[in-house]
Amino acid sequence: MEFHGSMPSHDLTYSDVFLIPSRSGIRSRLDVSLATPDGTGATIPIVSANMNSVTGPGLAASLARRGGLGVLPQDMPLQELGEAIAWVKAQPTQFDTAHVLPSEATVEAARQRLPALEGHGIVVMDGETLVGVVPATRLGTALADARLGDLVHGRHPALEADDIDSPKAAFDAMVAADIEFAPVLRHGRVVGTISRKSAVRQAIYTPAVDASGRLRVAAAVGINGDVAAKAKALVAAGIDVLVVDTAHGHQEGMIAALAAIRSLKLDIPIVAGNVVTAEGVRDLAEAGATIAKVGVGPGAMCTTRMMTAVGRPQFSAVLETAQAAAELGVHVWADGGVRYPRDVALALAAGAASVMIGSWFAGTIEAPGALQTDASGRVYKLSWGMASTKAVHERFGRLDPYELARRELFAEGISGSSIYLDPLRPSVEDLLDMITSGVRSSFTYAGASTVEEFHQRARVGIQSAAGYEEGKALPVSW
Ligand SMILES: NC(=O)C1=CN([C@@H]2O[C@H](COP(=O)(O)OP(=O)(O)OC[C@H]3O[C@@H](n4cnc5c(N)ncnc54)[C@H](OP(=O)(O)O)[C@@H]3O)[C@@H](O)[C@H]2O)C=CC1
Ligand SMILES: Nc1nc2c(ncn2[C@@H]2O[C@H](COP(=O)(O)O)[C@@H](O)[C@H]2O)c(=O)[nH]1
Ligand SMILES: [K+]
Image (cartoon, rainbow, N blue to C red; front, side, top):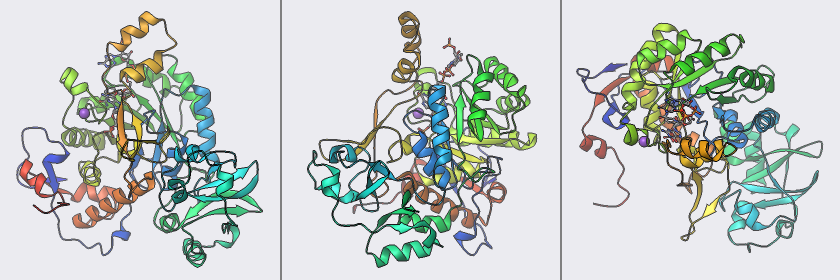
């Protein structure tokens, strides 16, 4: 990356900067590879944050199916983590995971899973028997206490897995049957679902899979307790990447945790953070991390900057740490503060190998937790910071009340935030479409066909607040 003009002496965040187009030999945005060079096997440079409101098994599977990587949070009990990892590994790579409910379930229960929007549906099953399909749009008009079984009318067409020899064949079959969405069967058993959109996605994305062809997944550990034992258990459960995570990653406790993990000689990428300086990256790399997680304070749920003044504008944090990482042959994940596809492009321009997204993904169908509806009918999910009073309470609820009260005093995050689903992009996959199409386009503007080339070729300028404002669309006349 190079600055257009001179490099400023003050630190910059994503809104302060923009990308300048340069002569390009890339003819199509589809000629761009978004695969990350960080050794995680992800085919798009997107990871989901290890936050309880963001990454559960459902989101991790959908993300990996489109080439990204979900990081399960350190707060899940080990047994639950093991089950979540096994569940992700058992999900189809080619088809979507079905939203299954029994015929006795109510419309209300279904509404907590899916918004009443086209392209989605509930597969109604009693045990192994397929009863039928309720398109999600039907949930908008049905009575809340109606049984799903009573909403199944006629036989909704299903697709035979073995008949679908290409995404286009699946798409065409749905057009011919005049449906947006179908269950997929193999030998009479439901093996997943497919929609017109997911058929198109299948042709564009490459799933992130392990050596056995199963979806990849990561999990996080903190720095306290028997870190090595937990890391070992997670690797035995099947994780592909380990994340060692704490607010202040440049501390002796982290170095000791990494030393304990190093002694296990695990053959997977080890991510550690969070840091925002070159020295931080050097110390983590020396202790055994292959990826440094970068970002203190940019997160949407994060109050660290206002509580402590500590942190660093994220563009400069990524730029400095990525330069240090490149010298050491390690990588950087840019963690936090991403609100638009442009932020992902700028994090990659600054040298990040992957970009971690939290709160934006909390407002999706796949995020953990039930959908809620506000007084005006808008659908949202709850989110909260991992250092918030709520998270601390859940993490240490089993402790002695005095110890819990002591820890709650140190909260550095928001406990209750409503993240609204975008009616045009209710699924994490819709957000991935938006992000990756934006970033593919950024790459071609820079004449780059890979993440490494983008690191080399990106030209970044500095803009005023008015410059940033000018870039926004104006949905109403002025
Ligand atoms: N990226 C960011 O900006 C931030 C992210 N977070 C996220 O919140 C979650 C919880 O993290 P965390 O609070 O570190 O909890 P952890 O359970 O990982 O514990 C952190 C350990 O470090 C010690 N410590 C020393 N100084 C600090 C400090 N300034 N802040 C926090 N701990 C410190 C703590 O001791 P003691 O409690 O006795 O002080 C404790 O032993 C993580 O997922 C983390 O990523 C949290 C804050 C900022
Ligand atoms: N200071 C805090 N940081 C937090 C907390 N919970 C999460 N985080 C960090 O934010 C990113 C995600 O950022 P987002 O803008 O995409 O939401 C996450 O990975 C953590 O590093 C918190 O309670 N306090
Ligand atoms: K913030």
